[in-house]
Length: 425
Figure 1: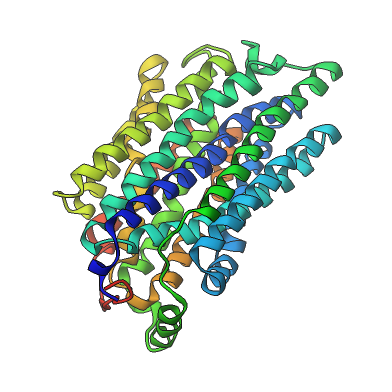
Figure 2: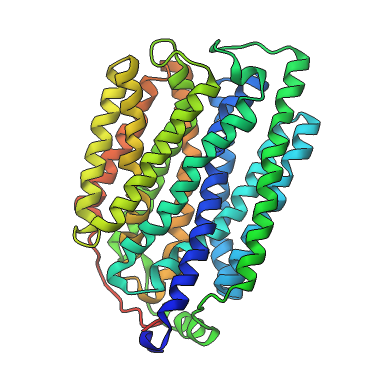
């Protein structure tokens, strides 16, 4: 099928709708950064226990990515996205019984189901955006829609700060280790019900919109042809994919580890000395930096080689993390917040470098890269480190992750055994 035969307008509409999907899953994902300190206080958890929120959430990527890829192959992109949105809505509604029961375990189950639905969206939407247009602008295009994902991550902490932390006794207290009464604990746990019901309603409306809008598909015939072609090749001959999987994994360790602990870090007396509700607005700035960086990155990647830009931001993140570890006060606080700007292009650029040259193996390669998002579960290690060596020193973990991302940018991302993908040409 000739690309010219496809109306450009259909691509624009598809990307606009998908950008909204990216926004909503980013919003729901980063709301975890508010849940971690909130449920830590409500259930009197230590850092390691509270980061089980991120552990079970990102464990879903490990367990569900390949099944999601198989489902995508069977039902296509559009239905996969609709199913993912409906699943997210039902999972968000599951926070109501979790709050009514006052059970941390039920919250973790609802989060696992929510992440399983987001995994299906990730598996479908990321490669769809990458292959829907010209291959040479894939990184730029994916960075652009990921910028809308970052818009969701920027708004989410403000939303959670107002509707969860500011409506709870633990969130408005300036004490770092507030002890709640039974009555306060019961009231605080119910603060999550309204925000997640609002999210569920929006997701149902978005699923209906995606169902009604025409999205260009590869078509069943092309997918069958691609399956036959895939049998002739091996994923493991592609260095950029093999090294890209741990790059995604380690990037998520750093992103989730920092985002999940930022409220607690900023609230520390020797850093920002403020309540959790006040610190939430600074988490929004952290994710806002990622959003701004992706918009700028989408433009820069039209002229700068993706690997070169990835190397630059990994060095920047490493330097900023070192400053946050070794200093105090606002210098440490703003250095860690500024890491968000360096995070901006990491995921979409690693992703597009990882699937470059995979041809008919693109879906399987995408499934492995999405599965690597399970690295976010390993951010629980930062909680363990924080409990043993202190929260500030625990940021040594993301610093080590940036070293690997730099290695990937300089050498690991160079493609081998490049295949031609003719499905949209």
